[in-house]
Length: 221
View (tube, rainbow, N blue to C red):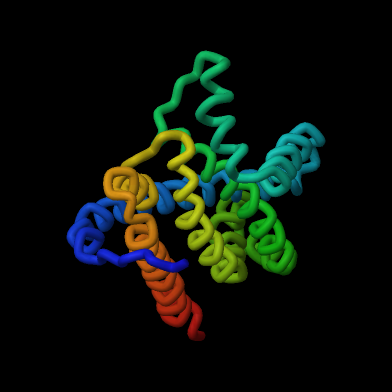
């Protein structure tokens, strides 16, 4: 028989702590995206390289990142590297795992974006005296990022949600970690995790709406 009594006041009183955890969540997600974008661009270029070893490294990264659970990738960063004498704390291990995952997905996204840029753009740039690197940096990359902007937004939201996996490697400073600590002390599971879910939803919606505003400003012409 349902006899659970809700007590929302303690959970609401803990909201400042949970908001501090939300800030850590955002820090991890943003860092993982910044690093993941940089690695993803390199991997996308490597996939199109004429050198087989570069293509092999990039393809292996993408295959592992996209076809194994993110949970396993975080475990490998925390426990697996520890077996090899490389000890990462919970924050860094979570960041490494999410970055690895982001880079793999973004590499495929960027590869599609690169294919969407007509080759004539590069030839035109070279005919105007641009070097290969400058043509890629100034002509190809802006068009590629425009083509993949919305998929990147989805990946950012996914990165935010993936930070919740930090609790399995002992991270207790992000939103899920703080919520779990509060739950252990009070056993008010429904109240705390309901509020945490609302905070995740709000963060994801802010990112999505912010991205729409940026896209409208940058790509309205």
